[in-house]
Image (cartoon, rainbow, N blue to C red; front, top):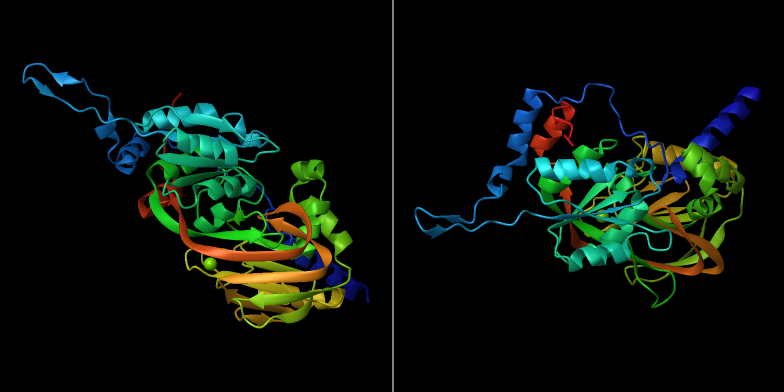
Amino acid sequence: MDTGTDLLIGIIIVVVMLLVGLGVGLAVGRRSSASRGGDGKGRDRRVDLAGGAQDLTPMTSADEDSGQETVVPPKPRVAIIVNPSKPDAAGLEATAGAVCRQEGWDAPIMFETEVEDPGCTMARQALEQQVDLVVAAGGDGTVRAVAEVLAGTGVPMGVVPMGTGNLLARNLDIVLGRPEWALRIALWGEDTAVDVAHAQIEPGGKDHAFMVMAGLGFDAAVMADTDSDLKSKVGWLAYLEAGSRKLVGTRTKVRVTVDGGEPFTEKIRSVVAGNCGKLQGGITLLPEAELDDGILDVIVIAPKNAVQWIGVAASVLGRNKRKGLHTEIHRCREIIIESEEEIEVQLDGDAVGSSTYLAMQVEEHALTMRTATRQQKRAIRAEGWPIPVG
Ligand SMILES: [Mg+2]
């Protein structure tokens, strides 16, 4: 029995880790202890990768001998919106200044987020300054706020992942743990049109954007219940601690409407809608989810008890179908969940309070993201990019 109990506890822990994976996790980054490649080889590659940086070198404004005016192209400008509470934030301004100098960009315009304003106002101010690119440097919360403002503007967005989960960066294959490389991807990467998801937590209420996953129930309750001091010290262990307290609980009866169809009722523990599907640790919660298909992938999780959570875990770990044990996936453009009881809601890992209503839609190709080119990915794998020189 001991072995069986241990196995059960082990599997329950895996389930908790899976389901609280949103916005959570090891800020592992793949920091390499290898040398940072500031050699001649790296520099040669940089010039290739920067492509066109030399064209942006300031020139004299006139050629007096020929009498012809030379038009001086302005250097491109980037605004960087940084969450100052993240450990990597302190050195970012100096790093970004050096990278921009090296790459022929104007000095970056720096903004800091605030607890009450995770990036929306700063993104609007950046747009007012007519920058060529806006970079969100922080976790998925900062990314969500900046994306909400940039959606529909056509101004490209870059990400410097500095959070605990960094789920959007993982789904877009943006390098983790190397801000200077993530910045170069932002400056010279390729423009990729991605979908933006939207959520309203009351009928006709304020619209919130999200980029990764939003939902209500168990996962949101865990995020709401997690001590933020503990989270900053021990990362995902804090969620594990909160999750273990939430695992045993009752299901809630909800009414679900998918794409305006006939509503149906379900008893659920959690409903999670994904704009993309990867969590940390190589786990994919929503195997068919794509960031650019104009579709939300929604998983309804409905185990009755701790034993059925094992089925959920098995379904998530071994998933290749839309219907698993005590889970079901809907692929849609809009889903509305209505409940008799208040249920906690989370957007990209941020608890936003309880509601009896959650509507979510997806807006296809609303945002232009900068992602790594194949050449950049090769350079990253080879550790072939130089460190910025101050
Ligand atoms: Mg999608």
